[in-house]
Image 1 (tube, helix red, strand yellow):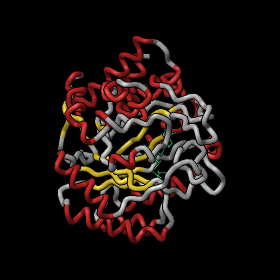
Image 2 (cartoon, rainbow, N blue to C red):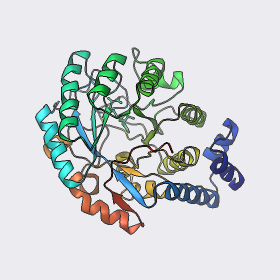
Image 3 (cartoon, protein in one colour):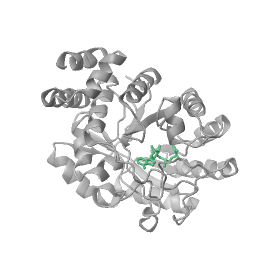
Image 4 (tube, rainbow, N blue to C red):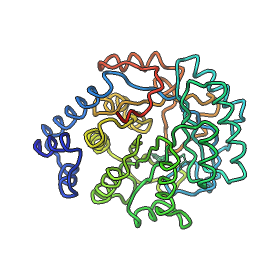
Length: 346
Ligand code: SAM
């Protein structure tokens, strides 16, 4: 197994059977080796710096009904909210003062009628914070909308493909949503010039190791600048309420594989990982991740953006808890970087 891991580090590629063997591997020594290799590569690329992104959850209104998501349209038990442009700018101001130089605006998927407002919001952030990166994560939009957001000043876009397998995609999403459309959106985003992020939930209901291999091979081909992966965690008001959560071990394994496959990629240690276990964030960094995304949303709205149960948004997961995050990272030999942290293709 170590030969395979060394090969992945050297060649950044394995074939499907080899990836599968790695995903199924339970040999503790080999898994420690995998993490060590991934960590070495991340240290070579970024030193011991971890980039921070201020996550602003701009709205929990969503027109979609993804079976796994707590803010799905049909969940009538969520109090809906939508931040105004001024609310969002205030979050950015607070974040800027704390040292954030990337703002991630994430929200449920809204109809095209809301696109004009989004263009205005992005323009005003761009004007007030010319030295900051603006990342959007607003789901599937028309090519024209993506172009308008880009021209207004957005630099990066996160859109997880969730699963590359068509049947599995249908198991996770109602009809009306398709992997074909999602991949089309991802292609547009890349063509337009966004630093583009995709990714999956680990352990989503119905996911098999073969699906994961398909996801890895897709990501290898697509070469995103960012890869967002975190464990699936059930939400009590969704059709998958009783499904088991994804595993820490598999998530860490995938983080390491992605680091070896794509050395320079921006790879967050996600909130879902920190929710799964109190040391999840640090374990993600030690497995090769190099980004964390503390929550910059207004405190009184955070609990309404419940994608899954018990979602962490306080302490080291909160923008105002940066000191705590700093200490936790220092304990494992890392430090926060307050740079913009763009993808470095060189
Ligand atoms: N609407 C945008 C979109 O679809 O990309 C952005 C918001 S969406 C809620 C952000 C991500 O949350 C999704 O890509 C999904 O992977 C993740 N997510 C949703 N429900 C989850 C759950 N139950 N467990 C873990 N992650 C979840």
